[in-house]
Length: 519
Image (cartoon, rainbow, N blue to C red):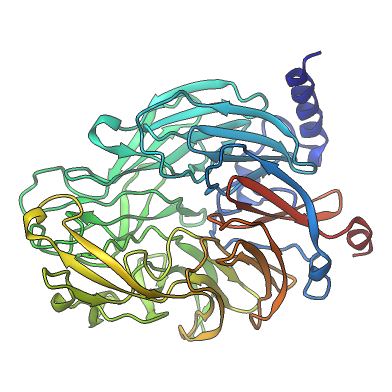
């Protein structure tokens, strides 16, 4: 028997053993209520909280954690995907590549490689899964369905025209028979697009555009959707963040707020119809996408129950919204911000025209990378803390009149920045504690657990564990390379694992077997 056949046979057996699952998992019930032995979506569940109920690893024993296994992709390319876990098998990606890896040992089961293509290979976020099928987006804007058992192609459909400048890197969001994917493009006259495709056939179900058709008088284009949204099954609404308008640093050719760029939108997943929209950065002129994770939390706000949506935005503001209608509950900065004149009645910042990029330069806080970015935040429901990898910073922005109507239309130069993990009290917006992770910051996201441990990375290539309540350092381990992924965790055979990608390697950490067994 060939090595590949042995691996596939082992994969099939492991899939049957794991939690009594079948090759058809997960179904919608599995996506709605994932167990501790599962991480079936980009965020772990539909809420986007990236918080686990696991408690084996605690503040008192995390210092004993060691390397369980490491998987090397052999590509030398930075991993930016967040793995998903189903039936004891991890799936993660790089542009043009999907790996299936045994979650207990780190042994590869199969690898799928997409053909060479002209798409923008900027990075890749991961895959979606439903009833035994993986869904993978490609740099040249295709959606590919793979058999989760073997990695063979079931179907391949085109989402957008790569020759026009579109690209895709998003991890699909699956809601029932809808595979929902976002399309991006950093060039003029391109619309950010959200599409739903049939999970069985790949046929197009609906499409929503973040901006009007090109050449609409007085309107802009842009609004790319390159991060995965979240879903509320009770309201039957998906929530998605959109990107910046174009030209990027010059707002004069595009007067007005430029809807629906730099916005949080709520859509019906069955029809694609817009229910409401909130714009964190009206008339953006600093490349501050609102693509950051829309985190869904149910709880009290100032003594009254609310279904909330929280976002730490790239523009430096922390937002708490009523997700039933998009109304603001709280808007407050979580670091130095100097580009807004104040907050309007809708809870949206009011841009200061004097802080738009100009030929003689403008000092702006935060910088173009933003106060935060793609790295995932976390929400700890026990402590009521929103945890985010923050990036306080200052930059000089310039407009270039000769390029005023096209593309970037300017330049920006970073002056100072620092990386922090911040714990934000969502009731007030006040920062309860902050923990420095290096002058250059870190590309790692944040994971919290019910035991009160927070996992993330620092700017020196360390995976670190902090006490969630205080920010106190509990443990760290060097990986040698900076991180650009968000940690995830799971428990199999009575042992909890924490995963974090660093460079081209996926690392799995766990307690020693005797310590895990005692716990």
